[in-house]
Length: 278
Image (cartoon, rainbow, N blue to C red; front, top):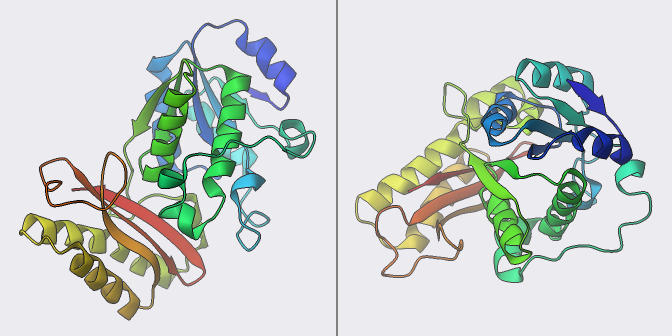
């Protein structure tokens, strides 16, 4: 496995290949990331994982400065997972001058849910992902389903900009108790880690209500918020949405394989997100 820090060296290395497969990450890797790498391997003739903590997608009060940088450990994990190339640029390498050109995704998708609570987040995501796509020129790229809205934003970006890239989604990996694996789980204390599974359990309860015939979405969401708040959480949203556009469902949207429940909530100082398709 090769560790590369510059765009020029990466392009020289990838010139040997025709179909790179890319897994973009911010590092501090866990088994969920490694599963994406393994999923990417048969999709191309060289597997590239990028590691870059992207300042553009962090709000001023968020954890950009304290986000764990664990490159040596990440590289060991990626090598064991069969990754061929790790691209780990510095901020100066990827943004040699202030990034004045930024990609603004459509407001109806990017300014709801995560985009509402983290304004500008998807502009930062789209800008860095498009830049990575331009550098790597992948034939395929793999993103995790835990970031449900993010992978939808990226799919639509690729489609609307006519990029010749196949976007694949990797299933959310979970701990034995059901907690979605996340780099930010490492922020949790032991007591918070035991409590954290309540987010996925609350989403399961929302799905159960739908399966039992409840159609008052406002009631389902309010009860979920109340339940988590009573346990000491600070929910941003717990919501039922249509899978295809993340808008609230209408009366004829309650068929099979049509809905997704999504949640974001803060437990102590750690913000967790999760989703389950209904």
